[in-house]
Amino acid sequence: MKQAFTMAEVLITIGIIGVVAAMTLPSLINNAQNKEFEEGLKRSYSILSQALDMYYAQNGERLIPETIGYHELKPILMKYLNSVYDCGYGESDPNSACIPNINTPNFTDENRKFVKYRTYNNKADIDMANFDDGQFVLNDGSLILVNNYTYQNDPNLYISVDLNGFQKRPNMLGHDLFMFQIDEKGNLLPMGAKGTTYYSEDDEYCSPASSSEFNGAGCTYNALTDKTFFRRRGR
Image 1: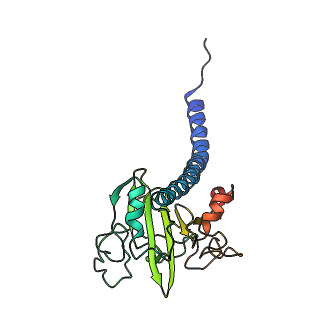
Image 2: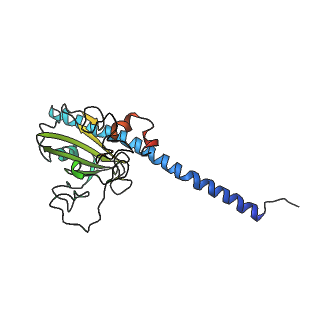
Image 3: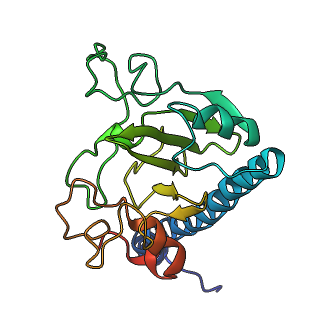
């Protein structure tokens, strides 16, 4: 007589394997996604910095907030980056842009399905005013969003990147959407670093407990300097 597993034993074993897989698979997928975002953020920071360096090499001067005009940053960046699709602006063309700013008087297409970005703790939609002066898709699928507007003589140049593209979730600040700022010397700084608009000593702009409407804007610096950031984000 040859010994073999009974049908009941086989089914029990398969059941146990299924339970273990169900328990571990989400964690494995989440870890893989976190690693992808971590590497994607580093790559995006490098690519954007190189684009600004190439502009400096060809023009002999740095891009700085005081000298660049309204809507001038987007075409400059597109010249030095491998862009594959022009998404418009968002403020001046909200009815055709990939990510419209629905708070502008020009927005009328209320029935259109469009992407909404959320704060770091997913408590509220974010104000698109920081992202509506130019947007385009790179050949790696990431989306570049530009803020290039002078407000009350206080010009701010922001470059943000949705690492996995606007059509893929989570579409949240500090998760797949990260902000950078060009300072007065032309340096590209990760938002949240000291000297940037959304720097805060108490993590007002990058905290699961923060109620700020800009919560998540300051996460870029943490994501680039804290090796545990992507494993604990949102907790």
